[in-house]
Length: 114
Length: 113
Image 1 (tube, rainbow over the protein chains, first blue to last red):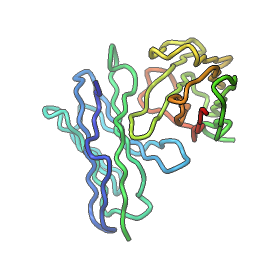
Image 2: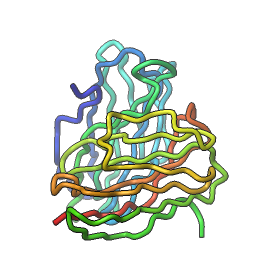
Image 3: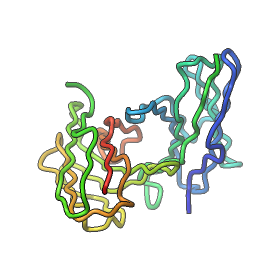
Image 4: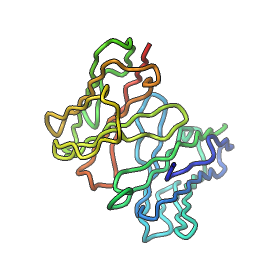
């Protein structure tokens, strides 16, 4: 049973437009959420994170939104650039029990079209 | 070298072979991890070491055997693998096991024939 779900395996967006990647989780013990980006032949690299005490965190073109009541988070990229084309993984972690290890979603392949 | 390195980057092995994957981190971290990534699936945590002690074995078959001789090095010894073990094997590190952010190596693409 997947505790972190990314229901869209792929997303295509025009350059300059907004990309919105979604992630749902089921474990209420998660209190920290991360997004990783992965290019082919490279390992995942950390992109942005958010603590459960916040509902928004912004870093340049990247913003993560957290809706705790819906157990949903999203990553907004605006404006999208061709170099953003990659697989994006959502991940979550809590402090104890079943949440104490980082749990990943299955990823969303983002393609930004020039 | 900086960050997390993994060797080899690609490995093809038969089901009767024995091979080892190597991971080295240059970040001064104390926790190291092995993950398996199969196509279209989430990263699956395999093993966790914290200060050289194994703290997590996520029901991994015994044909995978980890070794952590010190906080900077992590090995994954492979023997009598199955074709379904073909995947990308990723190593990661973090300051400690309780840290939230992990830093990944580039992975070893393993093909079992």
